[in-house]
Length: 267
Image (tube, rainbow, N blue to C red):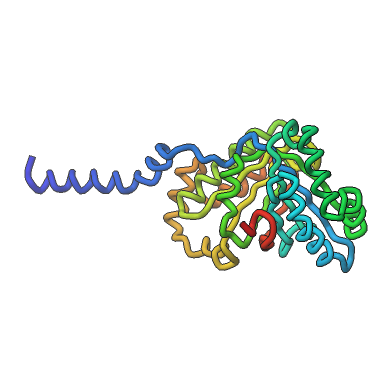
């Protein structure tokens, strides 16, 4: 074989490696810990007219009581755009047996009594400020993964989905594929929470960003990078992602909003 032909073969090989590198990297990467069996409680609230700031103050004043009661501090997000709720409070809970054990319940009540606002009084104040609320208990990623995910972030993006009958597992897989897609193109992934008890949502995902500018950076990603990332994740193309997800759901809501500097976000 001539020297010139050897050079052409070598260059072709290098180009093939360069083209295939994103997919090869995605296949060999360790599994993303985007979900799990750690229990979280979502409290999703719409304030009564004129009561939102009072409700935020009520939650802010309750944080020392939560900590004194031995519980993990919650993440508190305030609505800015999207769904109609005002606040989403996410309480890391571990498991039902842990969170509602006799000892934990007693410690929680003792801390509330010592604060001068017993649990019954907190509930009275809460219901005086709230027009609508729902609770969801969902299985999610390990606590340390959740903490690391939100650390230093200022903006949250929730997607709340109802799966079509028989499509829940496929929907969870689709959410995980989107995490691969986003990470392959340099974007952060989401955490995936799966319904256990309570409100109707089957899956909630939580993406986080430093601020609105960080959220908008996806517009600067070259089309070729997104195309390669989509194929690495198992999608035909970036434009195919949304239509495929919509074959799996009966309802879908998005909400963007700032993470309030209290509770878990204050650490």
